[in-house]
Length: 455
Image (spheres, helix red, strand yellow):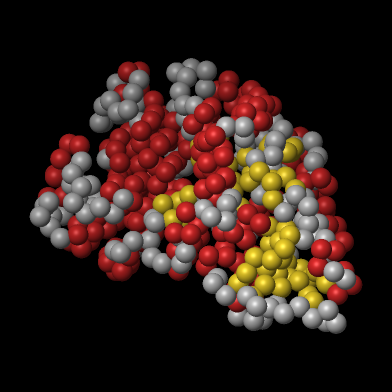
């Protein structure tokens, strides 16, 4: 444990030193300078106003349920954005070491990760008001007999930082905590089920979410005190941090918060009970068809799945506004180009949809950053590629980075302003782009969830 603390302290000091060096060399601009650059633009809700959050992926806070991404912290952050009237961008990080480092990077406004923050509160980060409380519990296989004469080894993941107290179990000398290097909580549940270990320790909120997947395992007694769960906030956002903390103090007193806790933090949660086996299930009944079509056209089937969920929730006979139809919600002109109609089978619609997504992908291939290309494709699927290309042209004209979606997204929103949609570089005219920005955010957040949870 001591060696791990020293390692984390070394990493934290290194990150802080790097940030100081960057500031010293003016490579990171103060927020005031960034805002001054955009004074000529109309005020809009765009990337600069977006609350950027990073959540550590584990069962209680972020998971896929019936094709949709949900979770306690995921829903909590979305509610924060709705109440503050600000868009939210949520990213997921499954590696605890990476999310620890990213907590200090300043890239995110909120980092949702449970680690011992008491030793890591330098100038740049602080803790939010608690959003919930939990405590460590023992997990065993059902009907496990406890032998008082045996030394019992309780396994925990490498990044488990919360105090464990075995006094409730009797003779504390018979219980030893062992942290397994490179092992996550779900790995320990698998090891326990496979009888590779006999005892593990887990936070209660995670335990009740994972146990429905392991019918041979049982929730044991608590082995520690309550501790608060908080967000990491970056200290450069004083105003936003005050808003977050004031909102949190108020929200945790509401019935809406209680419902959120009942939904995710209760052993009787209907979501948890009904999601039994969901980790191993497909996204939809059309997975094999989409996998085959996407393999043929060299796109990620999970991205297409996110598009389909956004368009139709996998409902095959849906009729939309403007004549869009079917599981892909294609407009008649686009559908005709790919040889389908509203009488075509679902499989034919999906194959046509894969071809169309591939076509959009090729438009932006080698023209945008590879890490952002699916953002451009999702935006084009919603608005049509012409409006996204217009936004790119505006971004390039005004000196922005037209290869990255966050910069281009600003100009897509600005296409509803006359000064921009009448610009000579614009070919497709007026467009209310804010809807597309929300569409892209939802599609990509879900897609990232699918990438983590589905092979």
